[in-house]
Image 1 (cartoon, rainbow, N blue to C red):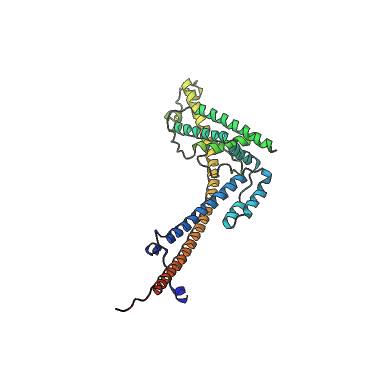
Image 2: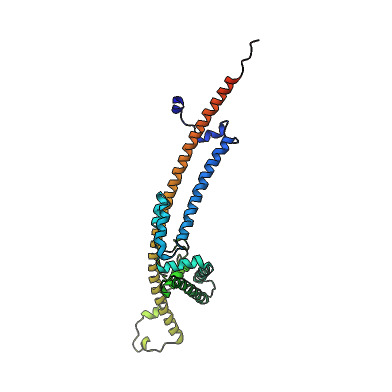
Length: 321
């Protein structure tokens, strides 16, 4: 026993070269053991995600108790993650129930937002598209979904503002990416009005200032301010003013968009940290499995040697010629 304790553990990769390696009952058993470990980890993660989905379908008043009950059944990083799940407010809860109970209505809003975003981006790129019609259709779809979510909230005894529901659904449908899993919204969202154009580069507008605008009126000539504007000039001035207002509004919305992106980046960083922890945990599990495999390999090798020695002793001695 001392000699076996001092003998270094064989590399698990050497298993296939041993008599009990691949193709033998022992090698098959070890492969099954490792496969069951991997499948067990996947089943465990799937079971946790399923319980979290069920948590966000519970009545709002029961959320904290249900969350604590799930956390008590788990250990380590899994329990910590569940305990940190935020309780949704009434607006977020209503939209979550829209996802869980009226999935077709929820998906219709998402598809409408994607269509509007595509048409708006195409219009900015100079392509044809009826932006006004798409916008009206999207507003109608969002309004209908907000009414459905409002009814779900009222049935549960929650009073939520229709405007807040509309803004949150609008933000969800127009955002190119969502940092939260569907049905797990925790807070109401504020649409910046610029979400559909996120990531689009706007071309520079040419200057509309002409040389005549900077020329001083010469003596004997009437000042341009006293000359009645032609219809084309009035339209041009109106277009310039409209462009100025749109630019100012776009800047304001862009600032709001940047703020939203920072919030999503922070959420992504937290998710990355959680994923890294899960990876480290899986790595430790793999190392433990490899160590267990090495010990099993050594034990099998010793058993094989002993079996061969016993077989040799059991052979009858042949008489000398």
